Length: 332
Image (cartoon, rainbow, N blue to C red; front, side):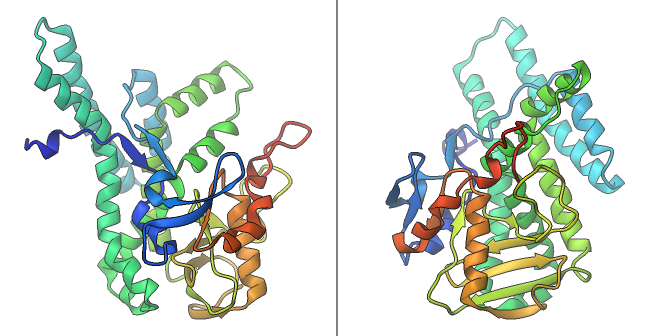
């Protein structure tokens, strides 16, 4: 390992900082809402980040059993991929276990083990980001034909799936609604929470594959916004904006219109509905306001824009999906 390989990646962005910078008007600084409900203007490095968010936890046999149980519901080739990744993580865990049980203590070995636990999953997400970078640049320039390249479409859909499942917003929402009505459900829910770092990556793989194989059935559109109201984004960059998504009670939506703003002017959407036709689609101001409202409602803390005025009208909607109804249900 080089010295660089021994650097611990502590600050884990669960929304890609490079992506958020498209709202920086040529800088790294964006306007966003803070935890206390104020507006701030600061570097993208300061938001949607948690220390050690993707750090690997030790998996017991129960955790592995739960992971395998969910993975078996996937197509066989994806299940095999999941198990290959799991094997790699467990092998690292096994090496650490042998070291801890030995009488040997070595500072460099301990550093290498710590680096692997902190960096492995973060590096996987970074690899997806790197492959998606030229695609996002082309889409931001309204060059939709970049996705005529099959390999680029595969890479973009893999990236897209993880933009849904890798976030703190998605994690906290999913864990909050896990059923804990009996001892078995409590065991499974606790295991899912502990192993979420792996499950979230597994779910992102599955979702990306599903979006790719269904690409000829769903409507893929590049939304062009020439109105005076710019697109905003949030701590949950891909949101389901389909009309079937309830805002009053919890339930798995039957359909999905996955909406992904790419810049204040351009967004990508994958539709089950017929709201948008495939290809380039110019949106009106009413549609932009509706999309921005849904982005804010499905955010946890941060909505992000290129000006304070761009996000101010939508601040009141932040977190609406995550608030609890009087009967204790989570509104979605």
